[in-house]
Length: 109
Image (cartoon, rainbow, N blue to C red; front, side, top):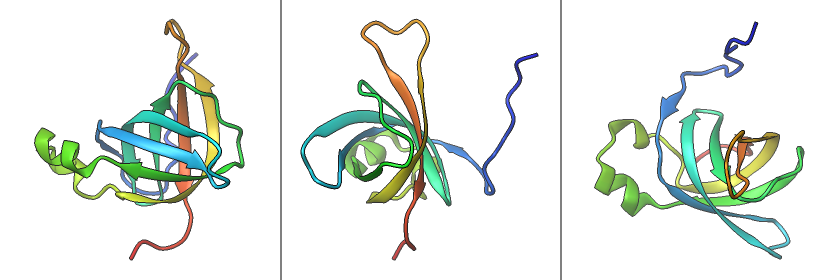
């Protein structure tokens, strides 16, 4: 029986907008698209798999969020550090795509 089990501690909000992320050493930049966010983290899709436990720096495209006029995007962090909690391949995507869940590190100013 496959059913969704919510594991977030706070409410989840759908917000699809472009974002960029990189490992802390900055050796590679990944583009992606956010799917949803909450007070403690976010989920996004990218073309590269990411290892659980990896710390990344991400930056969302706040101008795109304003163009979409989604009120649910307003609470999403625009940039910051996050730790990869999980990464799963998206079935049936060609080229390959991965859904990644991250937890924010540190308080948001």
